[in-house]
Amino acid sequence: PLYSYPNGQYASEWEKLLSFKPKPNATVIVVINPNNGPGNQADNVFVEKINQLKSKNFKVLGYIYTNYSNRDLNEVKNDVDKWITLYGNIDGFFIDEAVNGKSEYYRQITDYIKSKSQNILTIGNIGTEVTTDYFNIFDKIVIAEMPYQQFLNYSLHYDYSKIEPQNKCVIVY
Image (cartoon, rainbow, N blue to C red):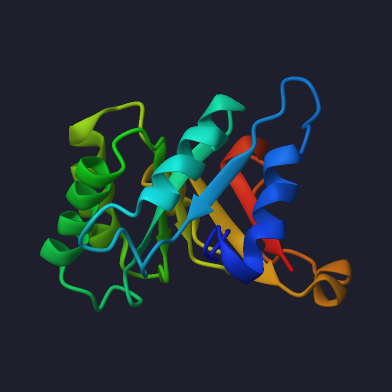
């Protein structure tokens, strides 16, 4: 996730990303977050950076928080619509602050997103291991989010061997 403003103190981080040359056939996914979601109006700096990322064939996802399923579904759907209206050429959504045990809530969100286009990518960030039914809701799931040193010794508790590798993500910082 790139939760920083493209200009100012984080401009060099954005430049590193824009100069990144991935391996052939690799997919680079960038999550952007202008204002804890899309905000109420398009930010021209983000519009420009999205276009630059897309010109490199990077996939750009809009950030949407769910407050661990406590956020009203209509507010979440409103953010989906705002992302599409304000920043139309995004490739999908990063659904953050997701939680185990609320699969119906998240199914309603992804169903709404997929009603816009079946090609829109959805990544659910539960940040910890999930039951396998969540893999039928999101296209990809963040099954671990932790500092690098902790990740080095981390072992999974669930058996994800039947889940395609490209559907599982980790965030290591």
